[in-house]
Amino acid sequence: MLPQPGILALNHLLGAEAWARDKLKPYAGQCVEFHSPPLPALRLEILDTGLLRGAAEDALPNLVVTIGAGALPAMLRGEDALLREIGIEGNADLAGTVQYLFRHLRWDVAEDLSTVFGDVIAERLVREGKRFAAWNLETAERLSQNVAEYLIEEQPLLARPADVRQFLADADQLRDDLARLEKRIEILTRKS
Image (tube, rainbow, N blue to C red; front, top):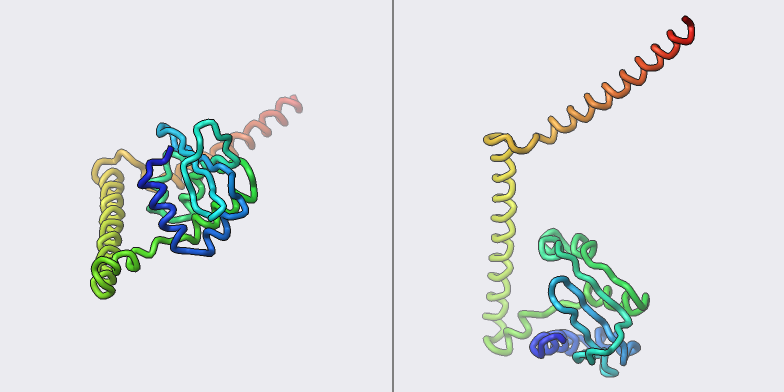
């Protein structure tokens, strides 16, 4: 079962957007299971209000969403990379709705912070949080590029992409030359 704070957070997101609750209302009573090994499966029941609650342990899921181990790194590469790490089985209509909500439901952090700190400070906090996240991402990208460059140039543990392309081209040429040589040998042996 999803811990109560998790359900509260999801319901907070859904509660802020009437269109999102309206999308879930037709699936009232259905169960969605989120599975991300090695964590235990999380089952949620959709209520007639469009909100969620923890489903009974014996409830059969109408939809199973499996989140692969590569989901967290994929999240840094973008939404499309993340979606490739997620498997969906079950009710196709419900799956489409869950995917639509994933793509379009966003937490308005500034709105929530403004109730505590006021509008101006909330906007500044969000702006600085985005700048900090962008800085972290840029730093991680630079670090990975530097490590790759070190492993290719300084400590040649990895091959340069140009060297790999040349090796593959040479291997293709060798294969073609060998095939032509075999044909010539075959022709010559037939003539003798």
